[in-house]
Amino acid sequence: MKNTKTFLLRLFVATTIILSIASIVFWYRYSVEKVPLQLVELSVAKHSIVPAFEPNTSNYQLRLEYPVDFVQIKAIANTEATITINQTLSSGHKLSVGSNDFIIELSNSSETRGYSLTIVRDNEAKEVL
Image 1 (cartoon, rainbow, N blue to C red):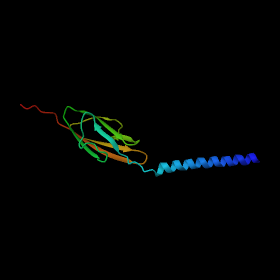
Image 2: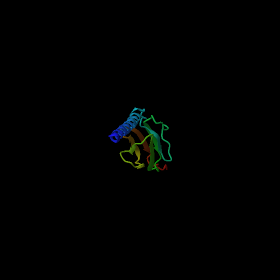
Image 3: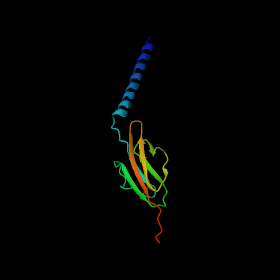
Image 4: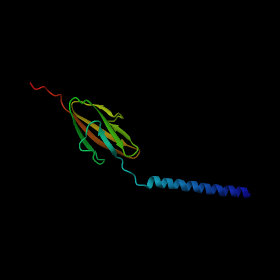
């Protein structure tokens, strides 16, 4: 009988400790201020976007000369997120002459945020006679 009471007391104490730890973890996970989802870097390899990158700015532009027909876009989020560029996971993109619009979308389990990048590729230079 004494062994049963001791066992039940130990079981009660262990259960109380486990539930207390679980409550603390739950409280910490859901009460700590959430960091807003945003980019910490947006760049195009070997080129400079305008304006210079700032996490709270959503729209960027870049003008490139005709010979540039391919770009690597780099986007890094401040927290774990899926980043897509024009709904693909690829960072490399072929450019057409004229305006090329890219939507950079970040998403996690609770939030989605978008940035836009317009790259204008100039027409082929004409020879002047």
